[in-house]
Length: 241
Image (cartoon, rainbow, N blue to C red; front, side, top):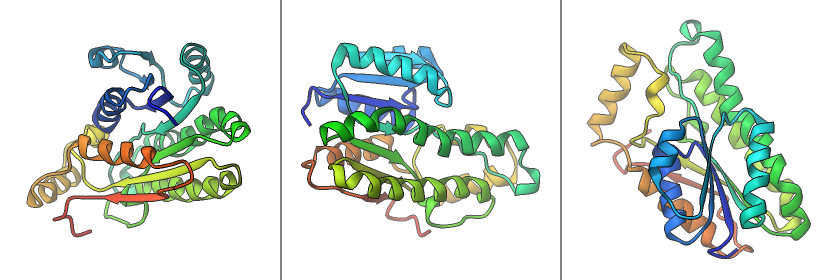
């Protein structure tokens, strides 16, 4: 890996994705930034960055933008699957469309996008896929049943993919944040569930800054290719679950 290697980031328009874009850009990397909000991507104003307003579940569209970025900057050395959706509610109150969308964004898209870059990584025996999971991928929380299910699945698939790629010196890493100050709760409507979540967040002094997670991501990537930081769990010290 070098500071000139292409980094691809999904969900790059805000939160952890935007913080990661700034961190990897400052480290000298060209970028392909993917998200649905073109104005937010443009506002980042980063050098050597291609931006694409695309739904991460549209694999064909992502593939086209990826090909264009690789034509300009060279092969993808790091794919960060950061795009995610969290809609919290008891299962019987969760709209069916939200259930499907969470699995499509949180589980299916990361695997489909990994499939776009892994053949070339395997062929050259190098490269990294970094999936952004959650502390909710290892612990069950009230009103998080479906969201936890998607993250449990992502964690399992990340570990399975890591084992598949290990013989080819390709790293597959998992970053699992606890509470972070992001827009992830935007799809959880007002009511007792959201109020309870926010009350707990306030009780521990708030969540981590997205920049905290981005710094850990950059550190994990910068380790030598032969060294795989398989999983990093990062949470506020005061978070007790």
